[in-house]
Amino acid sequence: GQNIDQPTEMTATEGAIVQINCTYQTSGFNGLFWYQQHAGEAPTFLSYNVLDGLEEKGRFSSFLSRSKGYSYLLLKELQMKDSASYLCAVLDSNYQLIWGAGTKLIIKP
Amino acid sequence: DGGITQSPKYLFRKEGQNVTLSCEQNLNHDAMYWYRQDPGQGLRLIYYSQIVNDFQKGDIAEGYSVSREKKESFPLTVTSAQKNPTAFYLCASSPQGADYNEQFFGPGTRLTVL
Image (tube, rainbow over all chains, first blue to last red; front, side, top):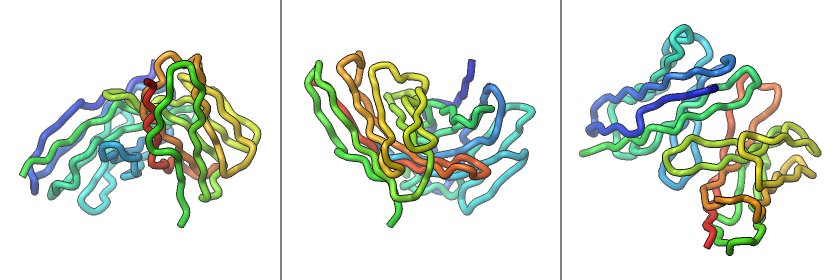
């Protein structure tokens, strides 16, 4: 079967750095997405990785290792508005998105 | 402004009734999707459509039906056959032929069965 694992919940302090991990086992791989979802709202796109390595976009960076089936999302200089769920999703061999359950990130002052 | 709209935002239904959730997009995207989101679970695909007048079942299609008569519209009907319909429903769209399949989401409809 296809499986994506992320921690259920993480807590971090305003101004700090947090790394959210995602491991996956899917039938094929055509890229990995990270989305942010505030409570009761729609997910919004953060990043896409298809090649190994680190993609940096402002305060957010995303890393991929295809050989390890592993990705992480790195959030720097945390702000209170970063409190949200972070969803990892993998595009499988049929170009269908397989979603993780999401990681709820709680930011404390 | 281009985007995806879903209506209504909150919907209440009596057990045994069918209900239709609206999804409209003006992004000129070919592909559209319906997901269901339950607490503590990832998004689960109900139906998707890659072109007008064609749609495919997702992982949890039982108790749901869709139509795709227009490129802009992809309504979802939750039928009385759906055993546990209370959930947050998300509609999404994406362009076909892109190098990757970024999906754009509507604001969602929260359905509660009374």
